[in-house]
Structure formats: C-alpha cells, structure tokens
Length: 137
Image 1: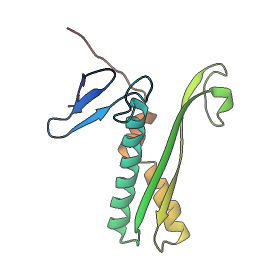
Image 2: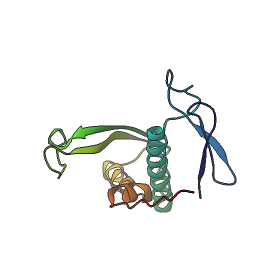
Image 3: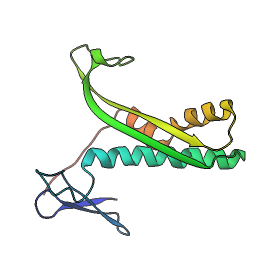
Image 4: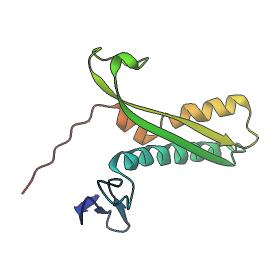
C-alpha cells in the first residue's frame, strides 16, 4: 500500500510504510521539492524496465554492464500517433523513450533485451485497461 498526504502547498508526502519520498509541482505552482506525478509514473516504468532487463541478462549470463532508460510522456491526438488505434479526435497518453545498453553484447542480445523490457510488469499494467475505485470519508 502507498499512502500520499498533502503537506504544504502542493507538496505530497508519500510512504509505503518503510520508505518515504516527496512529490510536488514544479515552480512557480509548487516548490519543485520532488518529482511531479507524471515523473513518478515514468520513474516506475523506467525502473521496472531496467530491473527486468538486468534480471534477464543475469539469468542468461550475458555481459550487460549498465542500463539507462529515458522516457517522456505527453497527451497527443490519436491522429498524431502512428500505431494508436483510437478515434481520430481522441487524445492518447504517449510514452516514448530510449534504452541504452552498455556492455559487449551481440546485436541479437541487444534486440532481445529491448523486447524483454517491454514485458516488464509495469509496462504490462499500463497497457491493460485499468479500473480505479477510490472512495472517500
């Protein structure tokens, strides 16, 4: 479970019971004391991809030395997104990025690791339909 509690301004204190971190809006709206909510979402995806690639390369004994995942997010019209299967007037969330793999890997190993990154649990979760049910008191 993750708990988020609004602090001062737009700063949000987040905890999972063991660790704590902050989220905030960038200045001038907030103080910029932590990543904004979309940066937190991208960090979850990027870190999951990196971990998944590392686990797979380690299991295979491949010479992967480091992984760098860079992601951006934007809301675009479906007609501006090649491969988006929505109504032309609809907006979609587009996440784009690049994975840099360091180490003496063969080309087929690099391609396989990129493919594996797209099978990480957070990637799969973001690709499926999600139902969010939050009640209040």
